[in-house]
Length: 239
Image 1 (tube, rainbow, N blue to C red):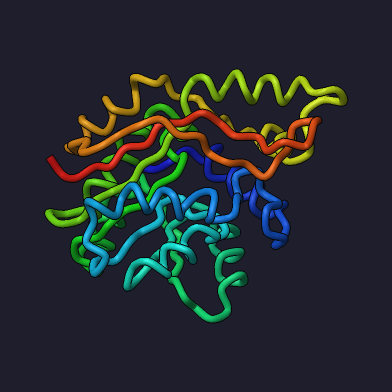
Image 2: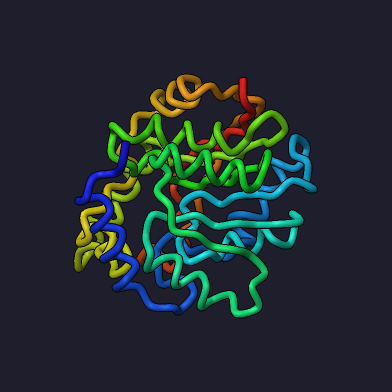
């Protein structure tokens, strides 16, 4: 299975039209608001001596933080432009980056052979994947975990779609960072809440812990407060 050309081109054009300025992407929050608290939830379950793979790494902001907590960090993204952003932002090479589709089962198996059992960090990828691809994305997590790896998965809830709708209805229309997401045909919060745990189970994953959270964005409300999108987190292992 491979992702649709529409989906691939949407992400490629989005990242080509995104600058290297930190926070230019609406979800490019500082790791202190994102990967750091997420890793605190994963830490009780995960072996830090295993590598960690950031699936859907984008420009690598979170990947570079993962590298401070694990011996090896690798960011994977569908978009070549995103991987180029990540490498430019990491001249010291604290993490590694590779272009690979999460729906490329053979590619994920080859990556797993290369890394061995690994931990996984995946923030807000399933919910905006095309519906036929969601199980394959979850199966990529299962492939990489192997027997000893543990994964952290955070996904937007349906409630976040209403928040984005409210933001889009701001006076003057959607703020610039959200407008770019919509203009490139990306579809945030597109999966139903019950679908996420179902897809994880179908992929052979067991949920070890879960809870509500909110994903910090780099956009602001008209009053200057930070936009946060309701989400749910899961720590998973192979069943």
